[in-house]
Each structure stands twice: as structure tokens, then as C-alpha cells.
Amino acid sequence: MKEYFGNIYSALATIFIGMKITFKHMFVPSVTIQYPEVKPQLPERERNRLYVNMDDCIGCDQCSRACPVSCIEIETTKSLPGEDLGKTSNGKKKALWVTNFTIDFAKCCYCQLCVFPCPTECIYMTDVYEFSEWERNKLVYDFATLTPEERQQKRDNLAKFNAEKEAEKLKAASEPKPEIKKDQPEEK
Amino acid sequence: MMYDFLVDLFGNSTAASIIAGTIQSILPLFAFILPFALFAVYLERKVSAHMQDRLGPMRTGWHGWKQTIADILKLIQKEDIVAKDNDKLLFNLAPIIVFAGSYAAFAAIPFTSIFIGTEVDLGIFYIIAVTGIVVAGILMAGWASNNKYSLLGSMRSVAQIISYEIPTILVALSLVMISGSMSLHTLSEQQTGYAWNWYIFGGPGTELSKFLLIPFMFTGFLIIYISTLAEVNRTPFDIPEAESELVSGYHTEYSGMKFAMFFLAEYANMFAVSAIVVALFLGGYQSPVGYLGDLFNAPWLIPIEQFTWFTIKGIFFVFVQMWLRWTLPRLRVDQLMAASWKYLIPIAFVNLIIIGLITLL
Image (cartoon, rainbow over all chains, first blue to last red; front, side, top):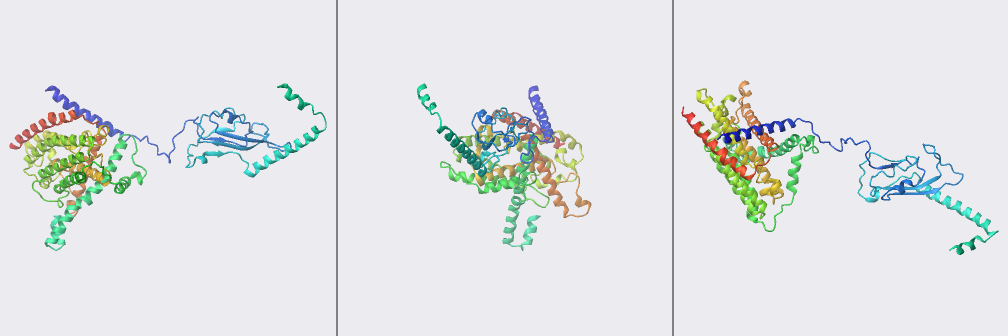
């Protein structure tokens, strides 16, 4: 009998305790973040979309080699002797035209390994994470600042320069000593 | 009354009474139940969200107030799926019967002193009888779905509703004993005046028996509230729907408008049981503090105020149902049966006898 009334009392009492707690929670500020309007505070060292500051890039290809998924593709073209490409912000002299610098973010695994080897600190992580696309090829970002015509021009210039050099060499080589060519097959 | 007014308006003939009767019968549906269901679903989502420190719907309109309108539009457009092995006739009939059962209860609920669907003297008796049809509809839905979880859910639901009808009836009976009437309209009229004339405070009058009744009335109120909560299958008594065990019980196989009808019936039922509790114990449509219409000598204002008070009281108890839903976990089947047969029914019987003895004084 005592247990029976004890049960009734404890049932009612615990219901009221529970109701009190839920009622209090009705006035606790909500933890929901209204995402597109309110952005969550990101941690200081979060890793998102890469950015390349092309003004500082010297085209050394170290980031591309560090990348574990090979998502960075760099093509450089040597500058001609007379050209001045300017300096990077930490004083290095630029010697290469970067004619192609693409990062495929569909492949990128956001490991940040490309950031550390960069000698001029021109490739780094930004806090942009909203860059989804409908088509995968739109995720291939081209960072090179030159226009397609300029790139072709730089390549043509180098080819022309090389061709001229080659022609000069041939001209110089055609006159004396042809012995060097004979040596090579014998060594093997 | 509303009906007489309408008959007069259409010219006092047989056709007029038919038109008036039709208007009278569909008015609560379109003027009250549909807007209430839309509001209650929104309230439910908001209450649950804020009790869990969330925000709930926020995208559609200011604080998401258009959410349920969007939902109902979506449900109307949805495909009405009927599986191959369903019992077509019963499957299509079940949502109609469930909704008809819960809507029929509104016929005897007095919204104001001038609007009541039909003036039956058997008010409370009629409501308890007619809501029994819902049980048949639920069992039909579970059986016709040809799905073991649906059938299990509907069987649980039927067992639960039948068990919990007994304490409801016993408490209603004690009220009938005090008031001497089964009509909810008469019961509400008896509780006129101020809040201390409500039956939860012993009813009208100032003699000793009123004060002796108060503790037993509170007990009766708690019992009827708990048992009506179980009758409408809401948490903590939602074992028929038990998402984690039975998918969603008897309406698992339903989609589109048929599902919407079950949903509407559920929310209509929530208000119906709150309205019954309010009419029995808390003065029905009566104001607890007197009427502005009396104060300013404007009799036309009184029904509007009564309707407002009725709605406020009803929605308050619907809110308490939601509050309990987000507070308590679901009962086990044996606990559910124990709560009814071992606790509510004996206490209701003892309460009935004591109230009977006090009214003899």
C-alpha cells in the first residue's frame, strides 16, 4: 500500500520536475545558427580553398611536387635575357613566366602540404568554403595572371629565342671538331 | 442560437433548414478545425524546437509562419500511393472514418453560448460514444495496410484507447452526478460567473460541500487529463505510433491527402479532448474574470469574448500536451496498461464514490 502511493507520488513529482526543466529550456537562447545569414566562427587555422598570390609566385613548382593528389599543375616559360619580371615581396627576383597555374579543387584534399614549401609564401589557405559548382570542370581554378594570348606569345618568344640560339650553335658547331659525337656509342 | 438565426435568414422553409443545417455542420471544420490544425502543427514544431534549444521552422515567412501552409499544399500535390496487396476498400475508408469520428465530437462542443453544433442533452455521452468510431477506423487502417508494423500499431492503439476510456468515463460520470446534466452547454452555463465557480474549484455555490469537493475535483481533473492524453495517442502514450519501433504505426502506408486526414484528425482530436476537459472542469467558454460586454452594456460582444476564452483555454491545454510530449519518454506497453488498470481506474472509482457521498450532503 505504501509502495502504491509512493509510486503515484514519485510519478507526479518527477513529471513536474521534468516539465519545469523543459519549460526553462524554452527561454534558453537557441544554439541554432541561421547559416547563410549568420556564419559560424571558424577556427583560426582552418583549411579551405587555396589562393595563390601570383605577384609573388616565382614558378618554382615546389607546391606542385608537394601535392599528394597532384591537383596543382604549373607550366613555366623562361624569360628572355632582356625581360624584367620584377621582384617578389620578399626580394627574390622572378626569372620565369608562369604560363599555366591551375589547381583542381575537385581533387584537392585540403592537406595544406603545398603551403609550407613555398619559398615566397604566395600559396595559402583562405576562409572561403562556399564554392560548390554544378560542373566539375568549373572547380579547376586558373591562377595565372597572363592572358591566353600573352602565354602563347611568351612560349613563342622562348621558342624563337631557342631556335635562334640553336641556329647559332649549329653554325658554330658545323665548322670545327666533330669527334664528340663518336665517343658516346663506345661508352655503353 | 445560430441555427434559428440562419433558418430565419433563408426564409423559414424546409430548404432553409437544410441550408442552415449544412452551414451549421461545416462551419466548425472550415472556421475552426482547419485553421487550428495549421496553427497547432506550427506551435508543435516551435514548442518542440524551443524546448530543445533549437529554432524550428524559420525559412518560410516571419519565423516560418507559412510552414504548415506550405506543408498542406505539398501534401495535396503528393501522389496517393496504394500498394498492390492493400485491402482497397478498407484502406480508402479508414482515414475518412477516423476523421469523421473525431469531427463528430465537435457537434456537441459548445464554442460559445450561442454556437453549439447540435443541442443534444446527452452531450458528453454522445462525445464518448462517437469517438469510439475512431477505434474502428484505426484498426481498419492497420489491417488494410497489410503491413505487420501498421497492424501492430493499430492493435496497440485500440487496446490503449479502450483501456483509457474507462477512467475518462468515470470522471465524466462524477461530473454528471454533481451537475445533473450531460449536456456540455448546460455544464458550461452552470459554471458562469468567476473562476471560483468552475467545477475544478467545486462548482458554483458557497456551501461546505463545495470546499470538500476541491481536492477530489483536482484528482478527477488529473485523471481525465492523463486518460484523454492517452486516448489521442500522444507522448508519453504514443506507443501506437512509436517511431523508433513501428515506423509510424497505423498510418505508415498512407501518403498524400489520406495521410493529411489522419494528421488533421489527430490535431482535431487534441483540441476536442482539451475542449472536453475545459468544458467539464474549467468553465467551458465562461470567462474567469467577467465580461467586457456586461461592463459596456454591449451584449453582442459576449459571444466573441466567450469564443476567445474557449480558444485560449483549449489551446493552453493543447500546449500542455505538447509540453508533456517533449518532456516525457514513451511508456512501455506493460507500463501503459499498468498505469490505466492499476492506478487510474481504481483511483477514478474511489473518486467517484467520494464525490457521490459529498454530493449527498
